[in-house]
Length: 250
Ligand SMILES: C[S@@+](CC[C@H](N)C(=O)[O-])C[C@H]1O[C@@H](n2cnc3c(N)ncnc32)[C@H](O)[C@@H]1O
Ligand code: SF4
Image 1: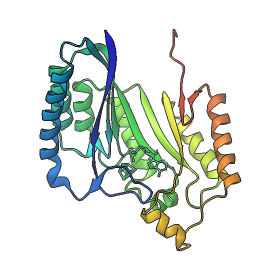
Image 2: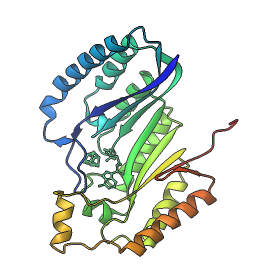
Image 3: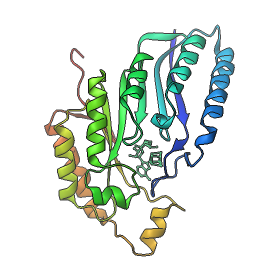
């Protein structure tokens, strides 16, 4: 039986971060329910094309955008449609991406109840000034609250997204962020070097001299520092931006 994964994209955000050119829209909340309806129809249509092809789903990733911005009940509806239409392997990894500032305990309980067993939380930076410079809607404290609530409802497999090379960021700041994250012991950490995307507000602000980026050497120092800190703490650098704790028994 061939094992395949499903990625579900939720293209809504509370507001657009200044650096982001992923497909996601702010201020389009009125389209959320219609989008989920269409998604469910698409899931059903696509399932028809692989019926009888002996495929089993071993991973489902609900990403964005901001999946946790959808109203209560919608993630459950999407997952129920997938489970009705496809053969989902027992123990399949089901990840939900959430953003601090859009999550409630009820939503997290819903995600657990409908089978999500991995959570990915976008933090990006721990210092408030840096979060503001890149247009994030949340504080570090809100991230901690989200992380803690996720643990309380039973998420024991977590990823945290971090960015380096951000405006005015220093190696010391990155080191401080990594220390704070290591204290939480997530199973997985993704580290992304900032890409200044064309046409983003961040590109404009940099061109206007509002902020300065660390130079190339500074950014590389951050990368090596992060790698060293994570490896010393037992994380495996298995892919360019990704670090994971080894699984017991493997
Ligand atoms: C598409 S985003 C979705 C995650 C979630 N919406 C959030 O913002 O936390 C996935 C990750 O890509 C990274 N990312 C987005 N834009 C980037 C950029 N211009 N350069 C580097 N990393 C970026 C961020 O770390 C982000 O968490
Ligand atoms: S919340 Fe995530 S997807 Fe939305 S704009 Fe920010 S980085 Fe992009």
